[in-house]
View 1 (cartoon, helix red, strand yellow):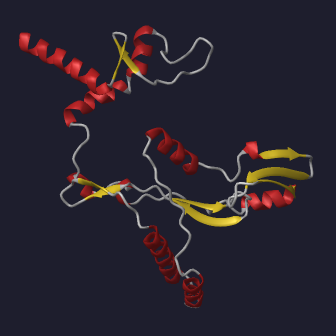
View 2 (view 1 turned 180 degrees about the horizontal axis):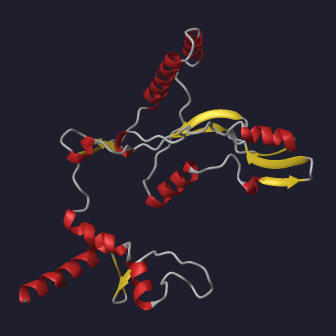
View 3 (view 1 turned 60 degrees about the horizontal axis):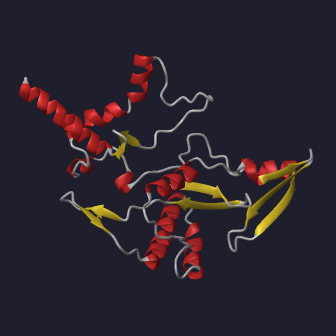
Length: 242
């Protein structure tokens, strides 16, 4: 869960981005898929949870504001949720974008003439292109209001994403313990080649650093799982012959 305080126009617009798993696991440790989310319930639950927390930490007079929020937002607070096909690349891109997202990207700043700053954004309601010009001081004011207090945590993890939970011991391992050592060795292959042969396998002659995308064995693309099975069968064969 990531807290953002800014909108596309840099104005004060506190909201949260959440990544939810489409399922969960029971006390027996088995995973169960969830095919449907009740968004009406989600909106009402979000409104109730948020207002109850605010009552706990704010002055008792906030109860009047709480009552008006229930009156003005009969169907709960706004929740925008869309289905995700769980493509790992899309999920990774989404998480990376929102975990370390700045208030405004430099690509959206179009001009600075020494006195004024011009930037653009696509309006959230209709995606219309909007260009706005502010004085340098007003532009800085819009930015610095979103700087969190020291040690304030903007990212929180809960549920299955939380760490150090004793209940996780009930989960079934996706990778067996005997395979951990083999899989970990793949994370050291770059360093091993560098030390053994004196060159970095990912360093291109042009100076750029390449990315490892796929693994090929005897001119055929193979998975790490398949490569592991080949290596283990050879290892078992050597032990039995010895």
